[in-house]
View 1 (cartoon, one colour):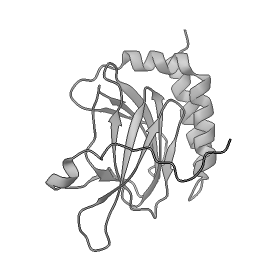
View 2 (spheres, helix red, strand yellow):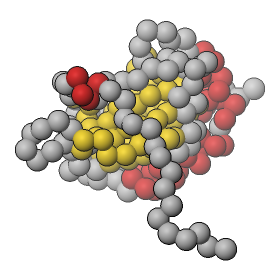
View 3 (cartoon, helix red, strand yellow):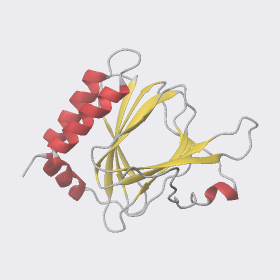
View 4 (tube, helix red, strand yellow):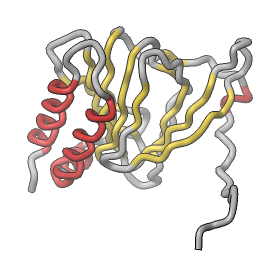
Length: 189
């Protein structure tokens, strides 16, 4: 059985190695972390099995040795959905370690009106989603499992601080409408 401490140590080492300097290459960081997640499935599954969460996400900060980089290990309860939020002026990366997450993206309107649904991403173990510091990106995360907790690693840089919740109106409390398939042209034969 793989050791979950070794798996976390490997992920932390990759994040620290790639996050030196003012702005890391987030695509390379995502690729390296994703590769490590796929190489350590037993250790990460063992870690997820140790996590018991029922009421809300459990957030465990991992030490980085610097205030300019934050690593968070988040355990998501079954079917849990976060509030609509952004991460201020920070760049960031989210990667599931166990289970699957749905990330709903929302866009702020220039006139300050209600945010608009912008897209949806589904991430499994080793799939990463990242954003630059100059993007004002509202989103919310949901554990797609109805039976077990999901586990994810979040890497944040630049301006330290917590995520910024968005005060939703009744219209943004609704879930994004379901995706619909569309064919934009002829299918190649």
